Length: 293
Image 1 (cartoon, rainbow, N blue to C red):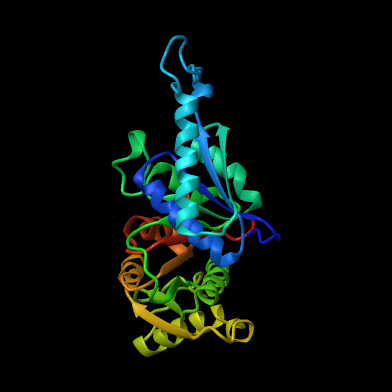
Image 2 (cartoon, one colour):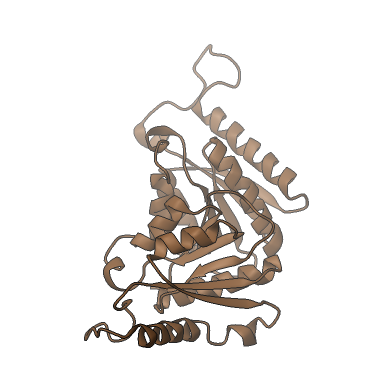
């Protein structure tokens, strides 16, 4: 994750309503972090050799380039209304949207996206751009899902992996910035969850299994109270599928945070079943955090 001083919050826009929701979410995030906001539009038409200037003899202000300039200007104005006083800039960058945003990620504090966009992917629950950026970005990716809330905890999914520890670090920082509690959730399935001992699976008695799962969660939170004494931390160990458990927790949360992949059967997928499931089903904004390679 990039935490360099002055690094901007970046929001991707395409003129859609989900993108404007993302702009408002990004503006609030920039205000909380005292960072500038950078509004970015990936302008694909030059790559496709489509004329982008206004046609000769056409109406003033015509052409694809002008339309892009207008949508970026509208997004900048929306951000300034949402969070007066933040520094906002806008830029059109030639390229496909996901590639443009991934190019921004090494120097961004966080990238913010709508859950759907314009074009052929608009009917998906979560758009292709959001999934690609969440899978590969060098910074956390915040997707404008569900209902924005000013109350409730920051929920983080924990499975004991390095990725979930990175998610915990981001989540507790967010809880501190928002002045709320951190709610750490660890979901497991019987007979074992994929924690330590994966190579030699054992059939635990229920109380032994519960004790092991409690330990995984406690170890993942080691040091959090010392570094963030102002943040109340609650812990929950739940017998159930992680996506279902985290989706339920998101119904009363301000934010839900997950790692880009997890342990066991989920780790071989591009983004991970849990992180993809949360992006598709969360009832509040969701963040995917990838650990450093």
